[in-house]
Amino acid sequence: MRIRRNDYGEAPSGPWEPALTVTVVIPAHDRQSTLDLTLAALSAQSYPPELLDVIVVDDGSAPALRIPPLAPGRTRIIPTRSGGWGRACAVQTGIEAATGEVIFVLDSDMVPHREHVEAHMRWHHQADYLVVLGWIDFTADTALPSPASVKEGLRAGKEDALFTLSEQRHDWAEQIVEEHDGLRTAPSALASRVHVGATASYPAALLREIGGMDTTLILAEDTELGYRLTQAGAVFVPEPAARAWHVGLPTAMRDWAELKRYNDPFVADRVPYRRYLRAEPGRQWLVPYVDAFVEAAGYEDVRATVDGLLSCSLPDVRVTVTGPWSHLTAGRRSPLRDPDLDLRLIQATFQHDARVRLAPPGEHASRAPFRLHCPPGWVPGGDAVERLVDHLEESDGGALHVVLAETATGVIGARLERTAALSRVARVSTPGEHPDDVLDEVFGLEWVDGLEFGFARRPRVYPPRRRPVPEIQLMAAAHEREVARLRRRTAALKAEVTQLRREAAKGRRDSARWRDKAEHWRREAVQLSRASDRTVIKRAVRRMRNLAFPDP
Image (cartoon, rainbow, N blue to C red; front, top):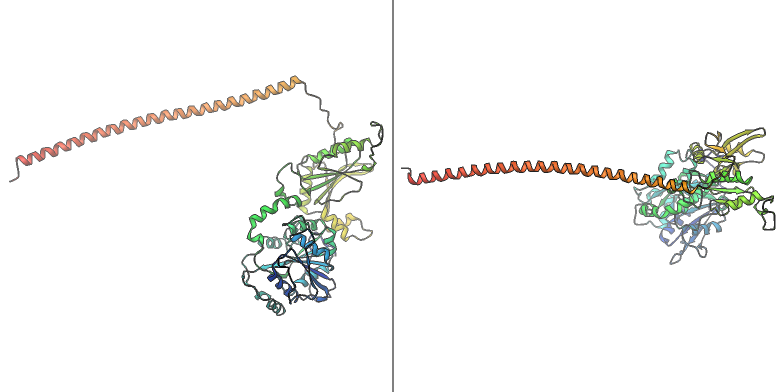
């Protein structure tokens, strides 16, 4: 089954014959009460019990976990491997112990519906590179049902009545799924964003091929795993029919801000797709965004190309120079007549640059999402690599052939490749097929003009000659810088004086205005005083008249 990008088609349905074995891995730390419900639900699954086994990985519980009476027949408990702890380490322990052809990771606070496992497994019978994700409902209950009622509810098809549905959901994940037709139209960088490991199933061979879990992570392990699965060519299938209850709310809903603060540095280092986490220029990261490969052929050519790549606008580009480095021995030789002189000069130039690797011929392994193969002697412009990546991302294509020049023997070109697309091609190709034909079928292949994207031949002389600057020119330059500084200072002082003058003039105007108001108020006071005096005299005269000539 060949799938283009992430368009996995319609869900399989109807009668079928299950054949694949599945190991359910349950990482658990304490939580015996919810584990009992998880195992009770697994004991009532519609998938054939002879094809299903369960491994509970006890991650340091106190007291130790036990297998309850209601559990699948082939259930066992093992401890997290020695020296490790945390969910990632517990899941990895289960991966290493699993015997099923499919590994199904289910958290110990999940209560799957009766057809949960079957809905996952129908997809795994279609192709061996599908990652299937369950559909989660969160509970609002504080009291838990009994394991017996859980099993009975599943058998009766009444799973919805086991718990009260919480109003909270994985809104962001469900929105991505809905907006991209169930992820069928989701671009590669986005599909893995909804990879939540609470209920997820993987082909065992694929999971082991990429190394399983990153056990150095305590949190964000599912995000990192989803990124590596994408690079391995996986297709992500969210299956609404694979419903399950999550008992209570997860940490991501209860402490989102604190969780994000913790996860961001670890995710930034390992998941180049999160561009907003890599905004600082000049930083280096564990996993680069672009791995560039240059063949060691001619010192000046290689140096010019590598210098251009390292100075491009993308901060997280790593360069691998491939060549026969094992030929460089420490034996006596003529320094200037050494047949491997150019190889030695390339090694001396870049061996201590942390952004450059010196690898043997044919070494193209990479954890980066993009690989750029650039012929030596061609120099990408400042934003050429970034523009190429943006162009490939716009169409979610598999590769760009970048035409640089045409010669009598053929085309000289660079090539930008999507790692996920190359991995998909390796999985679905058959003997005799040309890889580019398959690549065009499953992701798309495009030819572009390299000159339009800013590629150019290196200068005839490289590196450019940099003659020493005479001391008098240095002094003149320093004098000009000082004059410019003083001019700027003078301009600033003039502006300050002008401002002070404006403020002084305003102060004088304000003073005159207040003096006028004071004089006006004084005159009004005098007038009021005189009027008051006249009123008092009139009142006194009337009083005297009344005394001298009283009314009859």
